[in-house]
Image 1 (spheres, one colour):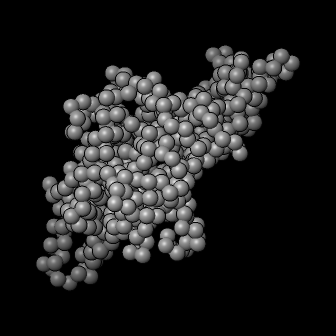
Image 2 (cartoon, rainbow, N blue to C red):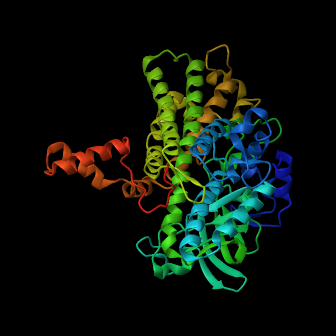
Image 3 (cartoon, one colour):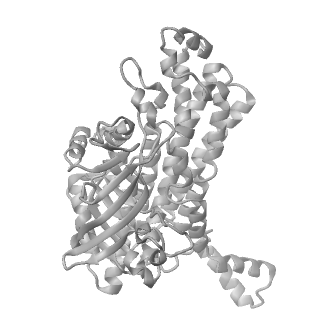
Length: 514
């Protein structure tokens, strides 16, 4: 059953008490805590939109397990069409809320765990896939929000998990019981975790046999005893406390945002039916390959949406102050729009160029997906620079809403900040200015462009792995005559035709041949 906005909010309020901290104080109710208000608004908006007719086909799909529609965040990708829907939804939702939807990472954990569990069952005779699909069905039936915890704190980066001075640097298995496992350790940079129903744990890096205790994937309810959360700061977190009385909240930039938190698992029990990998180190890399192929596809969609919104704000400000026809302004705005189209196009292409896994899950093209994420770590920052440039210095140092409304200095501030265009007033200019400030330096948006889903080097490593280097060298050998065997040269030319322009390899990932 698809939950309404109110049902979602009620379900979060109904959770057991959680151990959440910020600024040295314990948060008693995350749903009423001011610095989390915009985050609660954002995920609530997703639940609201899935009931609107114009959004239904974009963010809900028929379930292949239930006789009803479910959220795209709780449905596995089963075709190129599903992958492209995920991209389009990510972009459209980013254009509405301008931040993380809070639900993407959970869907991407499902996209990785399904095929990986299937592979382990096929090769090892385990029953992980049945466990996982039962869990996924439960999530669909209740329209739950799930988040994935990937990033361990890692400690000394030159030491593998088993060699860390503090074992908690990576989430690990403390004890294996007949009915389940006990886990401990840190995960960091967890977007939206405080408003999730379920937390899915997966490893953060490839592992060797000696790292067996750290090769664990499982799921726990967010209100499970033994979890401690510490909310991360943003440059504007204290502004949330200012919103009251006649203050609109303009200085927040917009009414939607996300949050990041550190989480510590302190001897948390996980029953067997929620354990999807336990010690199978040889399958960690494959799990991450499946997961990141979808995770990094999504990056192109959501960064396209953010760039679209940023471009819109910069264009609006240009209209306000009368510079919309200046050549350099038009060029910058056009480049911002093309930035959005570039990462969007890469995301769409990686879905189209993917392949079917024997489990029925659809895997986006790994090379193109990682290329998409790599591009997201670079060109959106040109859009950020252009937006700040068009915003100009006064926009970067604008008076606060408190000063603009102050009985003594408010009129002065409003006169000074009036944009000149009679269609708009000083408060309109402040709203557009704060929107840009929020996107480029007040929130996590730029951090997610750079680090969300893996940083530039992480994308590069995976792209390198899925590039067919022997094929590329073969192209030149044939073209230059280094390959002396005429028959082999002609066979290679036929191979080029069969590949139809693709330079990627899928390595050992199982796939259904079309």
